[in-house]
Image 1 (cartoon, rainbow, N blue to C red):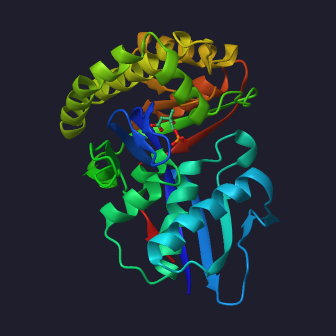
Image 2: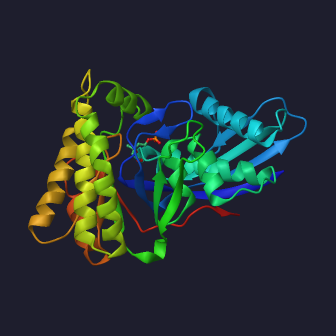
Length: 325
Ligand code: PMV
């Protein structure tokens, strides 16, 4: 009753922003991501007949409080699914992500947890089913089941059973790169959960966001298929800006950007002016991720690290989907 799984995090090129159902974690819109090889979590789950509670160790430290609660709540969900209500587990996770960098991701964490827990219970689940189960731990994590490009289909059923990710193109389809830019200011004061909710409930710009998603998705899928880097970059950057614009129309308004976030955005735009195709995207926090091509790696890395307020630049290639160890 023991299994170990490894999952990589993913970066959304078309963002998931807004929940249709808070409990089921179903989204208001489809989203599309690239799985990254540089950031991953390895998790071992072992179920024990004689335990009365779960334990959670992360990076060799016993975890209590909110982070523990999220893991044990998720295991409750898996226990109900597996019809094993009284079987408690020890969970041991290692994040291959510089934790201090503020990139510790719930995506790789919940994908690895879902995969290891279901495997430890000997459940036979398809990728689609695993994605659906992972979604209920953390929405964006459901895309990390697959390597390369994946799309999370929002679904329409009230029970969420048709809301899961599907593969779009494998990691070896296209060697595009992502630089994760670490900033000195990394604290996020509005969680993605709270930020989305406030935006859906109050932002005057939210209807515009939802309306434009099908066009962005259609165009980016064609561009990925054609390996058209500039088009993928333009669509991803514009989609990110639209998502962040919705937060300014919320009540009360908020933004995830810091001055250094904007400095990096300007650096990327200046690189483009000088002929280096590079595009940025930003999630629910101040850090920036930059898309570029392998032949520009050296100059992109150097230019980013020289930007004031940048403390580190971590380079990634397209990553693989779930694996078991
Ligand atoms: O799944 P969550 O709650 O971590 O939300 C992720 C939201 C964004 O990162 C902003 C966008 C995305 O699609 O990953």
